[in-house]
Image 1 (cartoon, rainbow, N blue to C red):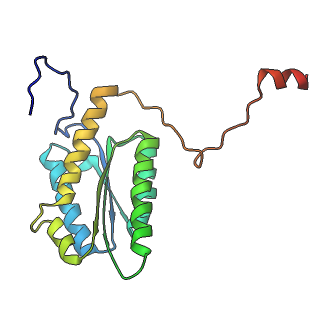
Image 2: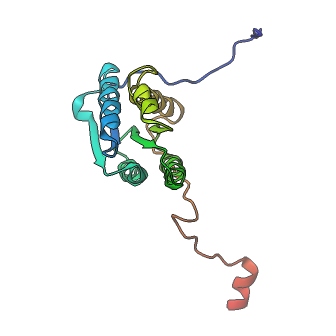
Image 3: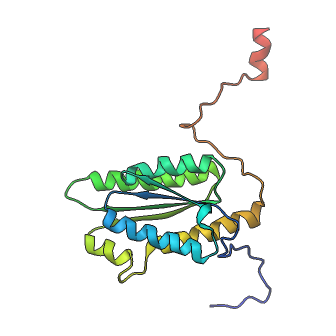
Length: 190
């Protein structure tokens, strides 16, 4: 790796959750896996200094419902970050691909439009064995990793913008624009 002769200014978040509030949205579908993700995410937040009373847990039926619940929490502006946890296993139909795409799109869109960081802790696995490995067996625990990402991003946002609310950029789907008249057309209507 080449060394740079000058120091580069960098902004990074840290792993202190002290004084921060977090929402955790966890799917009940594939609960054998998601409960392990949840326990590790909760533990990760506590280890970073979050208080139990500053963590709100929302349980949803399946992964498809995660984006809606995450957006609902984020829109309250009460949380510094949202952690999204679920587990999708490939089956024999295209259902998996449709759900994976919608969940990923929905979580990303919610984060972008609300300005609240969202951590993606939704496993998308080919087999149950892969999911077990990612929920604490061989590959660490992705719930814990999502919690650390949420803490870091909450601190990064604070470092960049401070405590001021971020103005959200709404998509055309979520907010219809009012038609505007050009100065020329206004003259015609007078």
